Image (tube, rainbow, N blue to C red; front, side, top):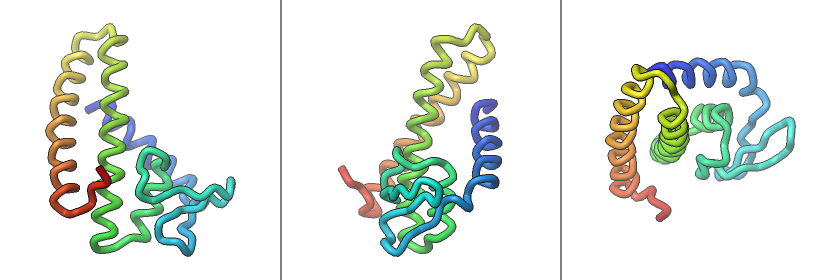
Length: 126
C-alpha cells in the first residue's frame, strides 16, 4: 500500500507539473512531447511516462479510452511488480516484506483480470 500511495503521489505531482509538455498530435495513435518533439505510440504503455498516459486519457473517449486505460494499467502493474520483486530481495523490514507479498498477490489477480478484459474486448495485440 505504501508503494502504491507513494507512486500515486509522485504521479499526481509529476502529471500536474508536466502535462503541458505532452500534446496529442493529429495522428490519434501518437503523442508528441512538446519539449523533445518525440512522438510515441499511445498503445505502447511501456514507452510512455505517467504524464503522457494521463494526457492521452484526457483526450480519449469510448472504446478508445477503455483500450488505452487497459494498456496503461497493465504497463503500470508490470512495472510495480518488478519494483516489488526488487524490494522483496532488498528490504530488511519484515513488515515491508509482508506488504510486498500481499501487493504481489493483488497485482497477479488484477493483471489476470486486465488481460482477460483485453482479450474479451478485442484489444489484445498478442
